[in-house]
Amino acid sequence: MRAKIRAFCSELCRNPNGIAPAVTKGGGGMPLPESFMQDLKSRCDITDIVSSYVNLKRRGKNMVGLCPFHNEKSPSFNVYPENNSFYCFGCGAGGDVITFIRKIENLDYIEAVKMLADRVGLQMPEQGVDDSMSRLRQRVLEINRESARFFHSALLSPEGKPGLDYFARRRLPMKMIRHFGLGWAPESRFALVNHLRSKGYSEREMIAANVAVETRSGRAMDRFHARVMFPIIDLRGNVVAFGGRILTNEKPKYINTSDTPVYHKSSGLFAMNFAKNALENDRIILAEGYMDVISLHKAGIENAIASLGTALTAEQARIIARYAKEVVICYDSDEAGQKAAQRAIPILRGAGLLVRVMAVPGNKDPDEFINACGDEGAARFRRLIEQSGNDVEYRLAKLKSGYDLSNENGRIQYLMAAVELLAGLENAIERDVYVSRLSQELNVDKNAILQQMSVSVRKKARAAQRQQQRDMTEQLSARRDTVNPEKRRYVRVANAEERLIACLFHNNDLAQSLNRRVPPEKFVTAFNRRLYQSLLGKIINEETVTSPQITDFSAECTPDEMGRLAKIVQENAGITAKDAEEYVQIILSEGALTDTDKVRGANPADLQAQLDALRKQKK
Image (cartoon, rainbow, N blue to C red; front, side):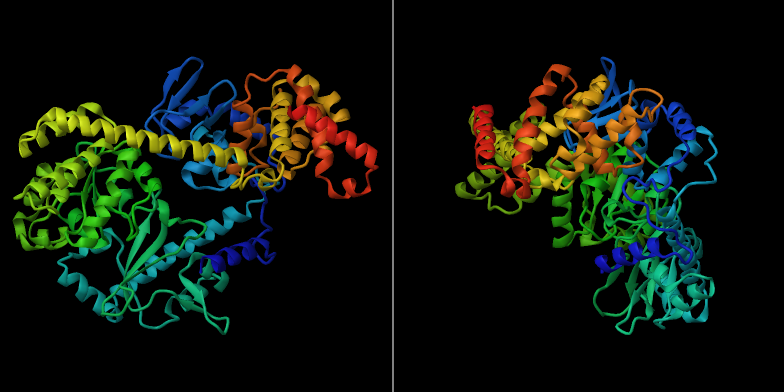
């Protein structure tokens, strides 16, 4: 399904009938006027813009903070005000202010430029902008908005009676139905498709939005039918996806929109658009399903969200951490819900959030509990929130329930499992507090527990070190390099290419001599060749007003490629012009040996001389 959607999106972007050709790489097509881009970049202070998403602290000339693109406990995310760029030494994300907005807001190049232009009060140029992907995304958003209106109207029509009856049984007043834009997908498999066609949308656009699927005969057919519908709205108020619940015992109970040009399940959060403006004590309530969230909002607890029926992701946790400091997990009390809570805890902790877990009495979900308690439901649920223990207490209690503490063997097994759990805590004070509790609870000498704890802590440290070494080996071998896949075959030459690019970046006066001695065609890997050629052009042809900066490449590179460029520049910041000669020799000597045709036609004596030179370099 995802492959089909991607194929449709690609075809739509190529289709000359109403949709312009797709833009490659960063989103360039015909470039935006240089004067406009220089004005935009001069007005967009990267520190101010990043600070609205990341808590930054000054470190020398630069700013540092916890990376918004991966979970980390020590800040490795750096912002460089001097050249308006950023780079994370932890995950490799990097680039300029446009790249940052693209990644954090999930936008394409032109959309990110538009967003920044609006922020600083600049008018986008009318001519020369290829915004085909932006227009496709806009069409998908329009289709989603029109579909939401259609589903809501259908719910309020005679045809939607099954849906209205369902919401009535769940005690939802019309006010809440309207507030969340709830709807009904009619029984017919072509009701929405026919409606959208009458509004001027093509079947391929409907399929790209994933509100329709293609039948074997090639027709578009409604993806949702005979289901109550829950629109999913992003933080900017756009309808980006839908969840649909069947009212019979058919499976699957829920179906949800797959990934589209405007929606990624890994980052979607139901009702976050409401919850972010209704935080209580910097706290988010994380529930399991749509109806749980809606019932909590109905009860006045409007800081509740759900993770859209999927296992919580690190990306979702990082989004939550932008708005809240604490999360109260309120999943169902059944086995699946409790397992989901156990999985969510380390992910939320990894995003720097305080975590608490609440248990709803009677094995009820939040919706059932609130409705069962009548007028007292909201007040009683708030008390449960305040009484909820933190995640460590919750996990210890779950462990304890699995052992028979009436005998020595059960107590020992519980103690060993508890020590293993506590050894994973980063904070030594936190560990000490719970060790003291265990000592008193089981009448075991605290020092004995601490001794066993130190063994577990050292064991985990060694495991982490081994994993770090494996990751380093993986990185050095470039086996999984998706930005420059050729690097895995020519690691040494590719590294020399990267360092020569960095050397040229920091020493622009080398451009003419390097262009003569190492023209771009001498580079072995296509990605590095493209960067090198572009950088040479910018310097020699004076394509930029000042010396080239990372930001000058954002229109021609994807966000991942911008991250690699930032890595090349920032991790080789101390490189000098004197270092260039070594990299030149590696590229000229080893690089020649990677060209199969040249090797086949080479004079044996010349080939032997190259091999001898290569051996000397490696000694």
